Length: 169
Image (tube, rainbow, N blue to C red; front, side):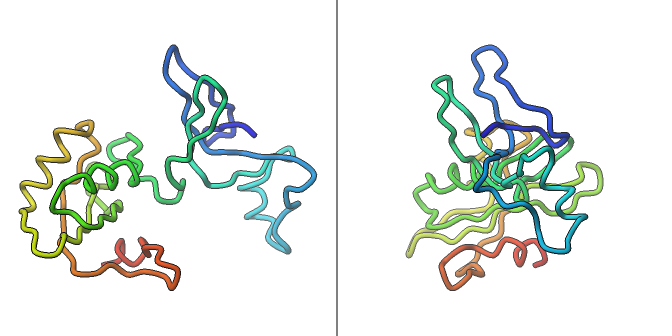
């Protein structure tokens, strides 16, 4: 198991920072490829290594911590924004019951950060309050510029939020 960047280079830590990258695995139990899908195999398998799609960091003791999924990552102005990190911050706001963060198209930044928020029953807050709350706790390129309040979010039967439906909304 190792962490790789988009070009398949192994990611190592810089100074005291834990490295972050996509998890790649290999071994005799890892699949050999998708049936009749050579173009997909070329994207996810190289030299026996399989890209899992999971973004993780590795600490100094060698433990891996999954941060997000690579398909969910938002690229805003050349910076990587992991939706899960933004969601976790928003969920600490006392009025927020649930949050889902996606990237939406933006003319100059490529993508912009948008949050869909369900409030706690009986709670009130404003878009400006949530944006300010997140802005105090996240890097300048990470906090959501757009917030939409919802009473429910699209979910699978197992309770997973369907982010692709939010991106298309």
